[in-house]
Image (cartoon, rainbow, N blue to C red; front, side, top):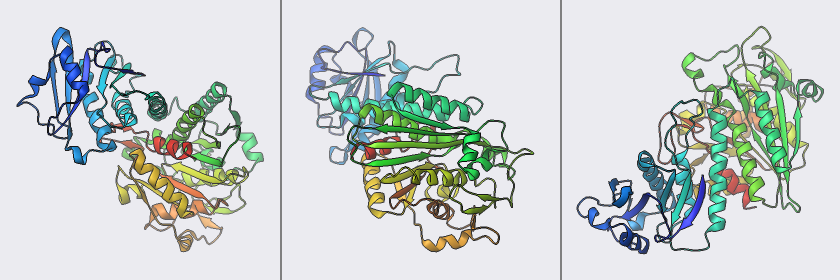
Length: 474
């Protein structure tokens, strides 16, 4: 989607999205546009400006106006702006004729919120549909403000990164195999001049990625481990970003019920997220060194699958008794975290659709986070809040390791039924030496079966904007 800035007199759009607060006070942009397309008198008695209220009507020469309510001015903020813009775009989509839409930037508002709201409402995964839905091709920001170019560029980069991630998550597991994800990594490296390593099965064996290899050994699809490196000329910090990459999770021999398997193509959302973040970082060019890692495989049942009771010697040398083959993500992440220890980075972040327990605890709109460095956690929480994403810190206590005790190995891969997300986090903590490690559990928020605020049904692109903003400001 191309984004431009126009004044009311310059625009030639035939579809306008305009916002009004409850007092119906008109802005300079609206007054100027009214001279060109009289519309203000049509609002009298028909529109109150309640938050998310919408009203659509035709103007002259086939031009349409979609009016959105912004609510009370004193209660308005960037989150409400993003949500109201998304509502306006959703209402306007049926009227798009030439792919262009003009959205008013309310005075003294955040242009980034306007653009992200439009991007999120405009997204469609219609690759396999014979009839494509209407969507915006050119977005005009209708304003008399100047100097918005950098903010528009940054917001567009973030919006495109979210769409890039969603495209990967929506793709079928038949297509989005470990090999395909590795191809996408190669494409990124070629486009942006990144260093890349892709480890195949034989190299993974040599480097003792035994926990990772165990998870994938029941599938005919070969495992891949990707390592991409972005490096600025004078990096101010070094970070490793790890994304869980189970391209389909059947549960293995502890097979999932059919209803629980319906969305398991999305179990590689962590990988899709870190690749989307990396794409944006390459375009924003912050002064950092970023290592993006993902252990990619399928977890499938077969005669060669790993079994309950197996003891695995992980890459770290610690042994793991397999208590449940459906607790596979923590095994692949364990080896990836050990690999990250070899990179001499300042901090490590992993993101994963890891536990069903996080959905029980926080629902489908709040992401669970935890780690071993409170300053890092607090900084990420603040960034996520400013980015418009909801997160909640879950605890990790040292004695949670007791839940993972094994009679025959260093630990089991699952613990007791209680505190499942935190215990999984405690398992992962055992495989990182980093003193600044953050774990993000997106099992509840990566994919949604119904729309929520500006977030549409399906793949959400959750945490892409928060991670970009977190990495880009340092």
